Image 1 (cartoon, rainbow, N blue to C red):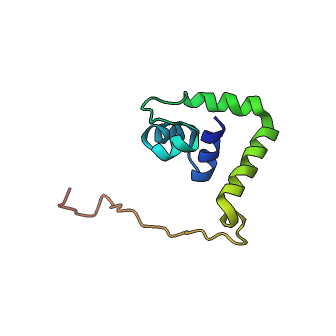
Image 2 (image 1 turned 120 degrees about the horizontal axis):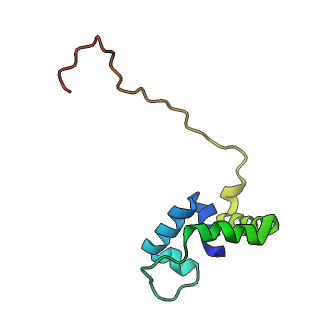
Amino acid sequence: MVGLLILKQLRNLSDERVVKEWTENPYYQYFCGEVYFRWEFPCDPTDLVYFRRRIGKEGVKKILEVSIKLHGKKAREKEVLIDTTVQEKNITFPTDTNTKR
């Protein structure tokens, strides 16, 4: 469970997505301590919610500290770049004639 939570933090994934990717990625399984590749889910995604509640804020904080150490200096950047590019949508007005529909 701790390995899944660390992967969730490192990859910025949802509970459902980290469990699904765990079944598809042997590196995730090895990171979580598996010796052999498994095709079945390690747990139900809702189990991660219950686990976080059980370990509390202090447990989640410790896991976050470990994930920051694993991520290295990239987790301690002084500035964050955000792409705010907006792409226009292809919206036509009812008065426009468009024969490609």
